[in-house]
Structures are given as structure tokens and as C-alpha cells.
Length: 296
Image (cartoon, rainbow, N blue to C red):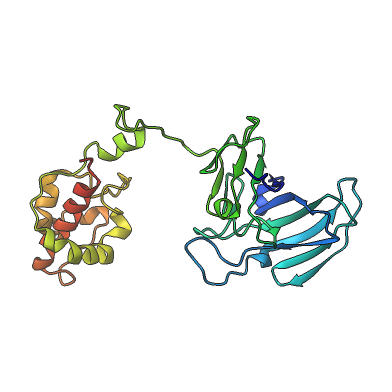
């Protein structure tokens, strides 16, 4: 079996997460070449429009293992050429600004970090399959990191290994103190607390026609969601979530909507805005959503 090329190793630090930066230190093998070229991806898995991730890279510097500063130049908008001075490995440091939360970008704040691979990791521009090691050095207040990557050999906390670059960029990383719930596949583990909270007292028993749900969805979003929220998602406060009210309240929704028994609590009278034929559609959405949430 052929020997794998030397891995690329990264260390991620968050010295001031409230500033929305992650600091990246990468150790790159040079293959004894006089210069190497590093690249930032312009794509991310599942989204292949050209992305300008390199615009968030700041303060890039390079040095040899003994600390000798190495010269570099930006060869393209997403590539940097670094002169190795015959060093077998070089160390590159840079910061990435992380203030866009999406499935393809990065977010760092005081309480947590969510990182995607493509906008975080520079790699060798050469197309050679090699392993990648990532060590996260978390702020003192953060205790947990989560990713689909397997742990790296050695058992060090928050240390992961990807078999290749494609795996690395397809494995987001979450760090902070998230709530973690475990369950047993095909087992009898009790549901976590949030499931119990969400399903206890869930609306049941209102008869409806499923074909009314699509129109009921539009009516609910236009008239109800701002005060009552999405049925079954949260129980609400002073204004109740309609996924947890008594069955008779939704069954008698017409009287509530048009006769205004809760007007003294701030609920408007919808006379003239909604029609009687809209009520079964709203009932269908409210009860249908509760039924969809209920464990089968």
C-alpha cells in the first residue's frame, strides 16, 4: 500500500470571539520545492457558484519552523505563493472574519463558533490526496466541539482528522456549549426534555380537511403568526401558542375570530379582514401542524 503524503495540520484559536475572528495556523509540507502555492476554495459542497471566501482572509504571514519570515505574494485573488527557502515544512498564519451565518459561511461570536471548511482552510493548490488534521483550541468558557470528522490519533480533545480535502470542507464544526441530546437507535432511550416539552399538551381532536392546509398556511402567516408563533414550536407567553390551547378553542375559532372575546387582551376583531370560509382553513393548518409534530 503506497504511503500517504504528509498531512496538512491546522490549529484554530478564538482569542477574542466577540470580534468575530478565528485565527488559523497551518503547517504545510513543501516537498522540498523552492516555493508552494496555497489556495482558498471558491466553492462549497452542494453550492458551486463562485464564492469569494478569500476576501475574509486577513493578515496572512509565513515562516519556517525556526521562525524565519518567508516572502509571499498574492498570485491570484484566492491564491498565495510562498518562497520556502528550502524548508521541509512552513507555517502560515492568518485570520478569517466570520460574521455571516449560512450553510456555506462562518459565524463566530462570544458564545459559539460555527465554521465551514471552504471559507476557513487554505490548502496546497496541487491536487494531491492527503490527510488533514484540525486542532481546536477553545476559549476557556467553551467546553464542546462537534463535527462529523473522526477524532485524530492520540486522543487529544477537539482534535480531528479528515481523510482528504473534500471530506474536510464537507464537515462543518460547531464549538461552544450547545445542548447535546443522545438517543439509542432502535433502543428505548427516553426522549430528551425538549421533545417532552414540545409534545405535552399538544392540540388534538379538531376535525379538519387536509386539503385546506395549504391555504390555511397562507392565512395563518398573514394574520396570526406574528402574535401566536408557529403552532407547536413554542408554548408562548402572554399570547398563547395555538398548538397548545384547549381543543374547544380551535373548534370554536369562528367565534373567537369574529366576536372578539379576547379583545380586551389585545386580539383584534377580524371582521371584514377574514371570511367565514377562511376558518376551516385556519383550523386545518393549526391542527395539521400539531399532528405533524406529534411523535408517530
